[in-house]
Every structure is written in C-alpha cells, then in structure tokens.
Amino acid sequence: MNLQNRVEHVSGLVEQACARSGRSSADVNLIAVTKYVSLETARQVLDCGLAHIGENRWQDARDKWEALGDRGTWHFIGHLQTNKVKEVIGRFTYIHSLDRLSLAKELDKRAEAGDMTVRCFVQVNVSGEESKYGLQPEEVEPFMREIASLRNLDVVGLMTMAPYEANPEETRPVFRGLRELRDELNGRAATREPLTELSMGMSNDFEIAIEEGATWIRLGSILVGRE
Ligand SMILES: *Cc1c(COP(=O)(O)O)cnc(C)c1O
Image (cartoon, rainbow, N blue to C red; front, top):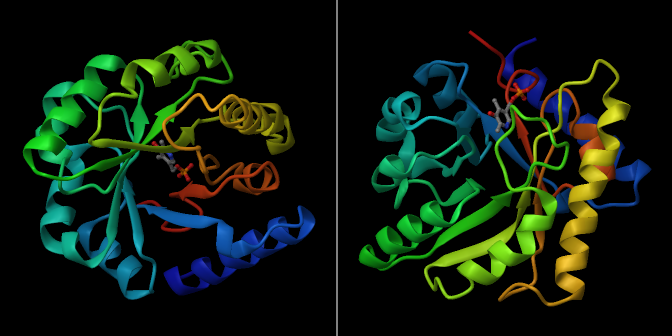
C-alpha cells in the first residue's frame, strides 16, 4: 500500500471505531508518527494533508523539523530529557510526556522566556509495567496541584501507552482507566482547567482506544510505515 492508500485505510478504521462507540470522527485527531521514516517520507505525509507530526527524540526529529517545521503541528511523544527542553520549546506545540516536576519547571521556565505557553499531556503509567514511563495513577492529582502555579504550562489532558497485546482487546482496561482518571480529576476540579484530551492508541490498539474515548491517536507503522 502506498501512503495515500494507508491514510484512506486508517481513516476508514477510525470512522468505524467512532460509529461503534457513538462518537464523531471530528473529535479524534490523528498524529502521524514519523520516527521510523526518512525526511522525504515525512514530507509526503504533509503533502497528503496530514497536519500533525509526532517524533519521540529530538536528535532524530531535527532534520525533519528544520525542513518541514512550518508545515505542520509538531508533537513530542517520547521521553523528554530535561536538557533537551531548550530544543523542543517553540518547535513542538504539544508535549505528550510530562511525567515529573523537574521537567514541568524547566518547560515552564523556557516557555516563559520565549513568551509562550506549551501544551502538555501528563503521561500516566496505567498498566503498571516497569518498562513504561509515566506517573502512577494515584500520583496524578498531587502532581496537578504541584504544577498548577506554572502559568506557561497548558495541561490539556492525559497520555498513556498500553502494553503490546497480540489481542488488542486486552488493552481496553488501560484506556478505560485513563479516561476514568480524567473524568475523576475533572469531577473534583483538580486542575486549573478541565482536562479535555486523551492521547492514547498506537498502530496495534487505536481502535480500542477510540472506543474508550481517545481524542489523539499516535500512529506510526500502520499509517506512515517503516523504512
Ligand atoms: C513510536 C510511538 C508511537 C507509534 O507507534 P506505532 O506502533 O508504530 O504506531 C506512538 N506513541 C509513542 C509514544 C511512540 O513512541
């Protein structure tokens, strides 16, 4: 399948998952994860009309951002080292991996210096896998209180990654858990602004994530391919 065919294929699957769960596909935003592909392929992704690009390491994203930065909205989806914040601020509109206070403070400081705000997702380790980054669910509310005074952070929602499952249905409790956590935080007005967004779902499991309320899905292999 070429890129255009994959985009159409994935859009169809998104529509079907939305139909199954009574959602509008307008509420599900697609991030094309270009970390496995070349600059040329990333350019074709934008040429196809996709607007959101995801990368998980600045070192790998740099060439693509320098060539294409003004053509899309960039999402930093990987673990973010504090010493890379200065590269990412002003280039990536969204950070999906806010997982500690020191990172929040550095993002806020650099954003303030640049007279901007940075949109963040707090990453949560819902599955409890040791190999995964993110706060434990019970740590999220105290963390939200700690960062509430950081005025240049705009926390829009929560992000999680499910373990790879041969049967994607088994990821459902992870995605449901993230949605329930968001709803609980909103019910208790635990954040400065209500959390509207859920960043969850990858190539293997995005249909389940959509059924459980994902508003941003991050797709690499199924959409952009691997080179
Ligand atoms: C690589 C990556 C993705 C995309 O992975 P695929 O399974 O290829 O869709 C999504 N989210 C994060 C955080 C990633 O690192």
